Image (cartoon, rainbow, N blue to C red; front, side, top):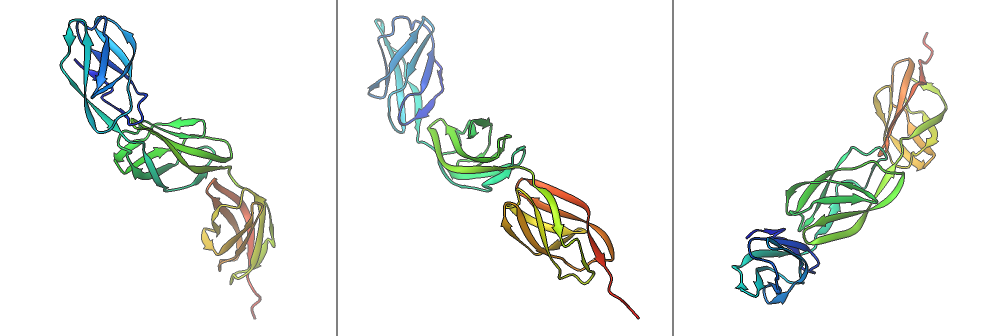
Length: 246
């Protein structure tokens, strides 16, 4: 006589179906000493809503003819999240993050706001999930397991940045020029490069980043700004100018 699922929340409320024979007219289904609420019943199955409980209990079905053999049911506590490996990412989604905590082994879904994703369970204390696409802004993150659903963290979707202008647009090949990059979605800037060389930078606001040019060879180079929302390239956006020589 199978039972499905064979685990559920300690708070009760899990829909459980027990299949077997001669089950018609079930008068009671017990989870340990507690009665479950019968919601459907045929000769081959009984569907119930589990009562609250803890640990492992025996489930039995009682009809006018007697009580069935027992089946194991395991109560699982609600999951607990302790950390997200990243709290922001591109609105297009597609990046994978790790969620750590406890009670994660039965995770079936991770919701980012209204968008759901199916996780890969690595252990009871860790799972990984590919973030679904979303709209720019912060959303709640919840994990659903056999023990229930846990909220408590937020994730911020960030649109791809843009570059509107650079000031100045040229400077010495020796580097050291302070350049203001103006654009949009720049507050989560992670790196700025001039011709592929990483530059020191400071994200002033969502529309401005201040960077100091590294040394470079004379000529035009691409300027790339990378944020948690993606990367943007200003092709030939900065010109290195060689100093005079005699």
